[in-house]
Each structure stands twice: as C-alpha cells, then as structure tokens.
Image (cartoon, rainbow, N blue to C red; front, side):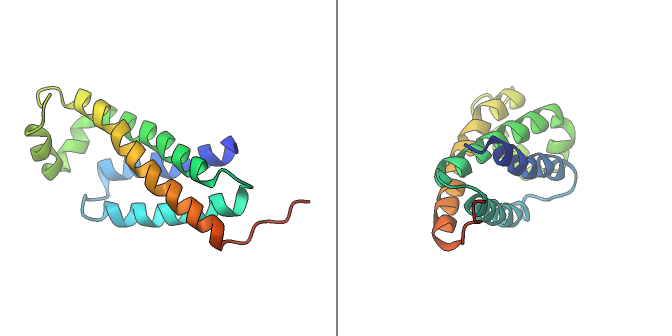
Length: 134
C-alpha cells in the first residue's frame, strides 16, 4: 500500500472541501470531481505496482473524511452557498441536526465515490505504462 500516494491524492479532496464551501457551485462540482478522479486514477496506475482498485477506494475514503469535516466545521458558509442542498436536507430525517446528517451521509458518499475511483484506477492500470523499477 502506497500510503504517501493515498494521502497526497486525498489533498485534492481537502482542496475541494474548501472550494465547495466558498467558490465552487453545486452544478460545477461533478465536472471537477470527474477531472480529479481521472487524474488520481492515472497517478495511481502510474505509481503503484498493484492493488489499484484498493488505492482508489482508500483515496476516496480519506477524501470523505476531509470533506465531511470541513463541511461540518464550516456549515454556515457552506449552506449559505448551497440552497439546493439546504432544501434537500430539510426533507431528510434528522433535518433538525444537519451536521449529524452530514456526518452520517458523508461516509456513504465516500464509499460510493471510492467504488467509482477504484474502478477508474483499475481501468487506468490496464491503459497506462508503468514506471520502470530501478
């Protein structure tokens, strides 16, 4: 397991956590995540010698920790810029505890995204030439 790579790639998630609070609107976020997933999958395929799916999955799990923590800590500014998410949260169970709701849903999103990034990394491993081992 290349933990240095996993942690390094998860910094995309930390950057996106802050960006989605203050800058990135909800409608642009999926496109940015697609680009991030492609870059991460390529870097995993290029720098790992195996367990590509697991590396991608773990990157997304660490991403989910960053994103959930930042969104909970900066809930006020986050929800002020995300009216659609606020409306959706109002219809869900625990709607009077939005931070707790984020804490519960964040890992689920992280797992789903981990499955996607893991698949991307596995596919990229079939397409990318490996770095020669010296």
